[in-house]
Length: 161
Image 1 (cartoon, rainbow, N blue to C red):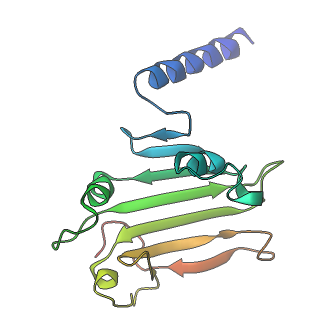
Image 2 (image 1 turned 60 degrees about the vertical axis):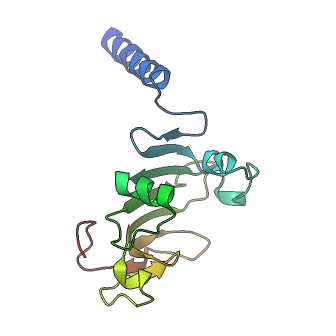
């Protein structure tokens, strides 16, 4: 029992150091590490929306990860004619008491095909104009029973063209 308490204390100390050193903010963002880890309502609040902007989904947990190219694209307004090697990964988890019950995973990357008004032929779909959703899958009780796939691009990695 003492070892478990010592481990918990050590983990809490590490979390405090990370927060004090510019780690996660009050919403769940750690922009240096390019990660968001918090409630969906934290994502809403950071954007200036009310805490209940997602209704039944606002208590769900959200983990978002992105690369430096995503930050560069946002800073430039996605105007580089040579394109971007940008990607974003969203993992949604509402499978806990008080959550929506939804569990979802998205992989999104910048795509020259989508940027030029085309349609991906690899199983993905365009979103937000110039991005391709490589993977869009999960389960959500509001959609029905079972696992649902809306997109599964092949290949499914961020390093693909």
